[in-house]
Image 1: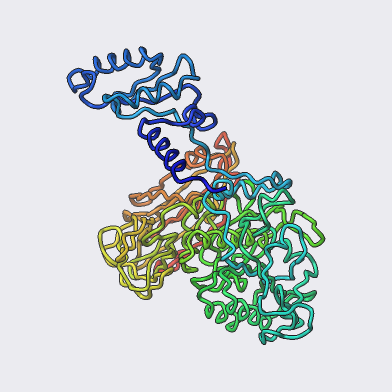
Image 2: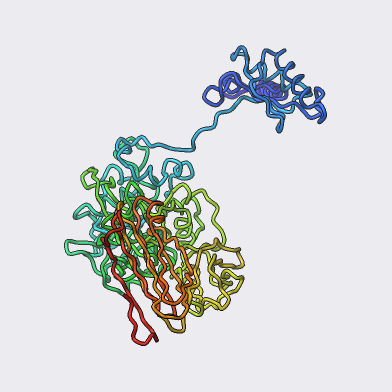
Amino acid sequence: MRIPFRVLLGVLVLVFTLCGLGWVSPAFAQGGADSVPGEILVKFKEGSVGAVEARRTQAAMEERRVLQSLGVHVDRHWPEWGVHRARLEDPARLAEVLQNLRARDDVEFAEPNYLRHKLEIVPNDPYYAEQWALEKIGMPKAWSESTGSAGVLLGVVDSGIDLQHEDLAQKIWKNPREVCGNRWDDDGDGFVDNCHGINVITGFGDPIDSDGHGTHIAGTAAAVGNNGRGMAGVDWRARILPMKFLGEGGGNVADFLEAVAFAKARGVRVINMSFGAYSYSEAEKQAIAGAPNILFVAAAGNERYDNDFHPLYPASYDLPNLISVASSNTSDMLSGFSNYGVQTVHVAAPGENILGTLPGNGYHNLTGTSMATALVSGLAALVFSKYPTATPAQVKARILRTVDLSDALQPILTKGRINAYRALSESISGPYVFRIIPQRERVGAQVILRGAGFGYVPGVVIFAGNVTGQVVSWTDEKIIVKVPKGALSGEVFVQTATGTSNGVFFEVSIEFASGLQIVFPEVRAAPSHIPILVVSNFSKEPATAYVQIIEAPNRTRTTMIIQLEGLEKYIEDLSYFYNRRAVQSLTVTCQSFSPVSAAVVSLSPDLSKVVAMPPIIGKAADLGGVSPR
């Protein structure tokens, strides 16, 4: 029905008149779920009701009387802001009181005491309560930032995916150029009937899951959320591109290259790689490096190996568009099976008893770095949805720089577990240093700074003592620099055109032209025993010994310089270090360029006998054949 113009004009005049009078709807004014019932916040204008600086207290009292005359009792007054928190005798009069106050010339503002809510979204999926990992990484708050975007394509290179699963079907990629079921390669891409993905093993478009691994990965990363069914993935809206690569005997590099080429052509932003082996492939590395617009997320491995020394691939390729993922548990500790590496494994994510989808509308918990990787892949897709113009390196930096730190995750680069909310919400800019490797080195030696945002135009590396190191090589994530002469132990910073990084502690080691170093690599003491360090000068000449005590696991160092007279012995009680922590292990080193020996022993409580001696590693040089004892 058409409304006559004059009637419509009258309605508009009435609306604007009410707005001009400061009218608010009773439901909104009274607040309901949006404000504290019957409470308002009021501020009078400066200089009104006698509110001058010299009479601030008196002014507040007069303002209180004004409010009381309107049936409003003041519960709290903040002089620094001039704001009153007030309570109405009759909460039903809230709209009327607000209107009266706003109509006064001496009132700056009057408003309900609005409520503020946690920015969290808890999905209604029935199995969500079993998904401990999503709570751990902060997903309820993260979903208030983004629940994903259909414009982001997530590639799952794995054992295939159940295309009909209730929590996945609506998200599976559809090929608009392929006619399904005609057994013909309509789009000429080399795959027949690849309507919803590819099978690089057979060359057809049948990425049907053969064992459930790929379906589980897809659900963990990107199952539909808040649909009242099954579980919630990290990203609720990203589309999923299934690429079947793993068969009964695993997969091979050539088939992986085929999958990457297909993904590049389809605009994939993230590829999940929950597979690996301990054989380096230059072809595999170049394929990943040759897809710079894709962020590859790789499982670190499940053999408890140090990938710095026994690298698993593809996780250990040193590339700016690759994240290597370890597994952590409910206590933010490294899982007992997880591989690690301070240079090659970047971040941890929950990987124990992780709920995922299984073929046939099933759901099940699985454990491994594969599951941890799926969580990071889902997070990467979510970050791309909020920051669509970001590069893979920028998304990687955002994920790595916003981790929750844990002392138990020291063996990985960032020392932390992913935090999805922080990755989506925090401001990230300038250079950032995760580690300097090694943390202790002599002047002139080369050290590695691992971080993010260094850029590709070299800046400067500033050591304590305000001296700069000679840069050997510089990339966005890795700097190799020489420790400069004049450097002191202290914080090291990276300075670029975009700013100055955080500081990381570095210790300049003492270098001897000749001498002896004795190392006790692991010193432990039972609660009833007394650990003792004994340093002996078996020369008749005065000597100096440099002792370092390194505490595990935080690597805190205590340095002692011990002056010894000829044939003198020095004894130090180490109980203090053990009393500070319930479980403690020490590394003790003793260096000297004089004939000095050292011993660490544990004594019985009555000091009557030696009950333990740790192993010794000794290095003698230019001391006439003298060896440590």
